[in-house]
Image (cartoon, rainbow, N blue to C red; front, side):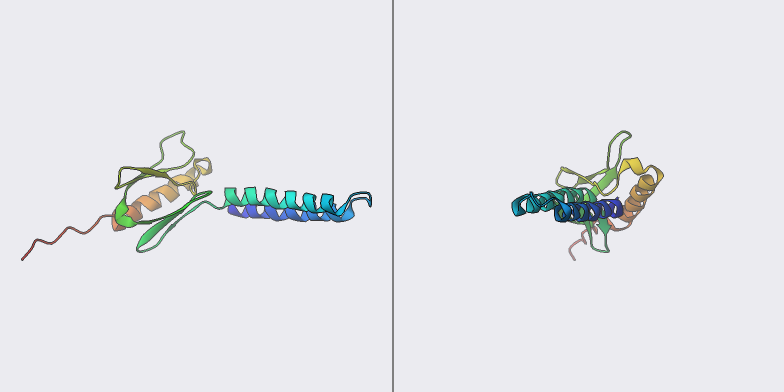
Amino acid sequence: MRLVGYALAALIVLTMVALAVVLPDDWRLSDRLGLAALGVVGAGGLHLLARPRLQATETRVTVVNCIRTHVLEWPEILDARMPIGEPWPTVDLADGSTLGVMGIQSNDGDRARRALEDFRLLLRARGEAEEPRPPQ
């Protein structure tokens, strides 16, 4: 999705700029700039669609959605699930809230299920907080 989104964004900007250059002479500079700006706005929309991802490291999980980025520590995440019919998985957080993970799309079928299962394996391995040690 990311590759297609950014390729289309570049194509739209290049097309609109080329169109602005080859327009007839009776088009003013403001019209040409507006056409190029329209291409940039379209590319910005595609950027928002191509941006989502889920990145897991040893110490934290970064969930990048269209607008917001959430950086979570592994113990903050209790579970991840993607019920049938949902567009993307959600993670249950320790504070009682849930967070959508738009970086995994259910439309990807088996790839999405594998990505969610891989994330769940990491969650089981890294997500549990250490038991407090009894005072000595």
